[in-house]
Length: 108
Image (cartoon, rainbow, N blue to C red; front, side, top):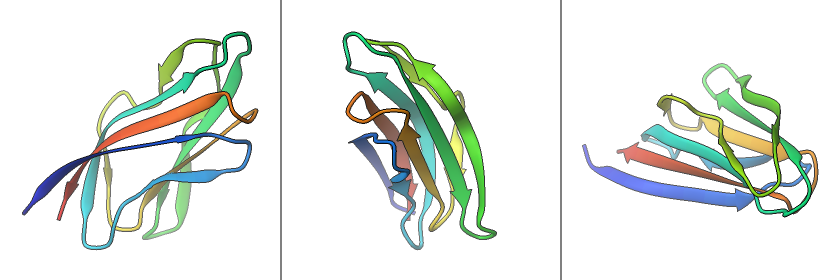
């Protein structure tokens, strides 16, 4: 079973967006999930969800968690296992302040 380490990142907006979608025929282990605030003056809130595509269940990993200016916070304190088509999505309380990064091990 081949293993591939991947890193995904994106800037968050007020619209919910997929940060990572587990590919077909793949199991993924998410090792790290972090949101940073690059704004030097303003705090912003982040919300991060995980969706289990086998039963279309979406649950919050973090909901309206404040990220102070010039700081970062994690939304994942352990490992998260995703199956094919499961995904992590996120949004922010304001545009252009928060960036999200996840580190993933994909098993194919």
